[in-house]
Image 1 (cartoon, rainbow, N blue to C red):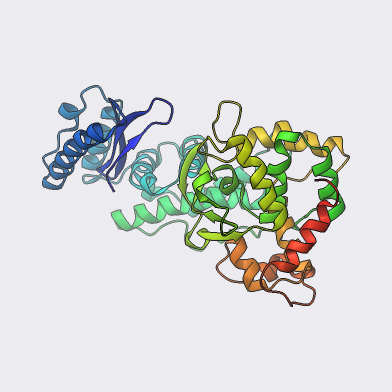
Image 2 (image 1 turned 90 degrees about the vertical axis):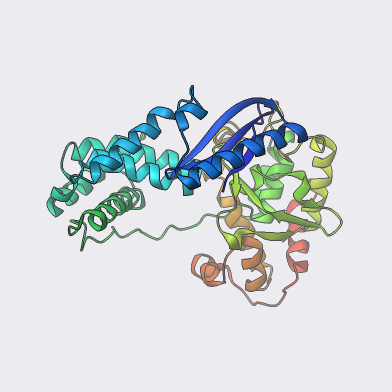
Length: 390
């Protein structure tokens, strides 16, 4: 859907629209204001009308746009495809441009890496309908042989991610050009069940007592709410409801870009326990003049990579705890709720799950007798966990 956006770094407005299945963003020199938005909207309506009628001339409308080469390349590639079956590299580029409009920034970066650095170099100039099943399996073997930075092989889930993209490209090409995909009959690698490693109450207490003061409430809130990394880092003050003691999860931040949550079920209201409520009150004194609850020194949202590498892992080392990624704080919240006896349905809602299936599959050994269903049991447990830290 076409819209008018504003850049956070410059405060200038930009056009956001789709042309030839490509998401286009064209900058303006106009600052954010009602009058300038009205001017931009008039121009955008004209662009949309011309696109609908097939009369839009990108080059004359945005003569200095860096998008011109890409738009012209897609037009040329599309014309060529009507004449002959394309090479793998050419169809990959078209498929990417057609589909990226529906992807988030982080996923787009991941797909770009796999296509440009893995699929295209491996299959080279092979005509896409000539790709054989043997070559597809050879590609999987090649991916399995790759090593991570620490020397470990790629995990089966990571290999499957590569193969899923290759399958999507081959399947789409087969449908368009009338051949049988060479991917047929190839199953994904079996992914071992990952054992979660939540923190015990004494470990939570140890972390909160020894962490940097400016991150204490950040970690406390993560431990006791089960928010995903993108949800907590992208949390804005307008979604913190002190009156009803609820955190409204409406957005997430990925690769510095604010987006809709992971799925519709992730749109939820998390009930604040007393420790969480008090943590937000303390944060309000520090950052309520900013848009986001948790910010860096420049007033921008936290970078999860920066927090993980420069704060979280050094903290775990300093208190002699096993290295665990920050996502274990989400698992910790779920296990604490279960151990306190809260209702699985209530917990699933707090976590943003569609139902209780994942809850029992992932956290089954943490389910005792199921009695409470209003958050009060967890509230008492959370208060006991942090003990005399406050």
